[in-house]
Image 1 (spheres, rainbow, N blue to C red):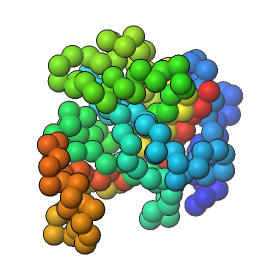
Image 2 (image 1 turned 60 degrees about the vertical axis):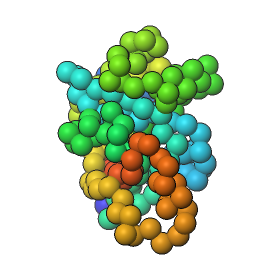
Image 3 (image 1 turned 90 degrees about the vertical axis):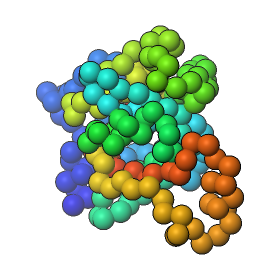
Length: 190
């Protein structure tokens, strides 16, 4: 199975997709992911979902990368009242992106403004592109990981076994988070 996934994540030049037009090169998350999986989510990342008709992105700081159900998986968490959650719930695919220091303002803006109030990408001058599966991403990103959602569900407060989640949600206005587990189907970096 691993050989199949690695094969899927390595394109021949004749199979190059639109991402290469923007300076991205496909890479294997399993074999070439250079970031420490424990640290990757400690730096803010951008999560995007939707389609060509409408999409939204938000800054995330919670997540994980590893294996689940014999698949390379990426897990993200989105609070109930976040606008991006609507797009995640309707989309089969989502992307997680990292940006260079020169785009620090992108992560701040995307984390403090709501897409309900206007097109955040347009306000920042970002260029939206789409994977072959239709998932949105920004051409200014340095890494784009595309996932196909395998599982999604809100946290059940009955399952909180320590004070950490109880205290987190006691005064958290955005509501309980939902967990989205995506199978990594593509990854690109500049």
